[in-house]
Every structure is written in structure tokens, then in C-alpha cells.
Image 1 (tube, rainbow, N blue to C red):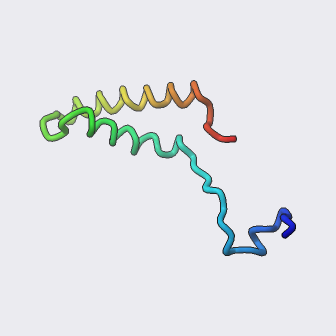
Image 2 (image 1 turned 30 degrees about the vertical axis):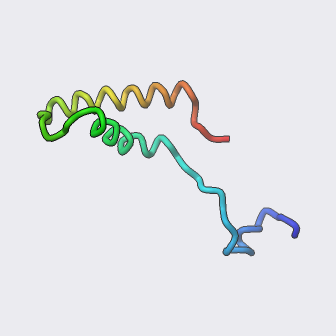
Amino acid sequence: MEYTTDFFEQNDHALRSPSIVLRDSLGLLAVQILSVKFDLSTMSYDDMLIELHTIINDLHSEYHHHGSFTE
């Protein structure tokens, strides 16, 4: 089978490589990290926001360090 630039348009049943944009998921990832590191039921909202801000900054730093994670 020959692969052309319109392969997926002609073969809508074909599996496509997923396009994942990690940066769009950093907020959700930060909340998940926060919930693993701390007992959210005992934290004040101020403390949650401070820790969440720290985690997001750390994730942004790592993201910039590694680049966009695309090929």
C-alpha cells in the first residue's frame, strides 16, 4: 500500500498517532501531584494555592528544560 499525504483522508479507519500537548495538561498534573503530596482535607485554601503555585512553577521549569517533548 502506498502512503500519500492524503492517506488518512482516504482511510478514515486507520489509526493515527496521538498528538499530545503536555503543556496543556500541566494544571491537571499539578493538582494530581498536590493531592498525592498532601492531605487536601486538612489544608487551607491559601496553603493549597501556595503549594499548587510551587508545583506549577516546577513543572514549567522542567517543561522548558526538556523542550516541547515533540519529535
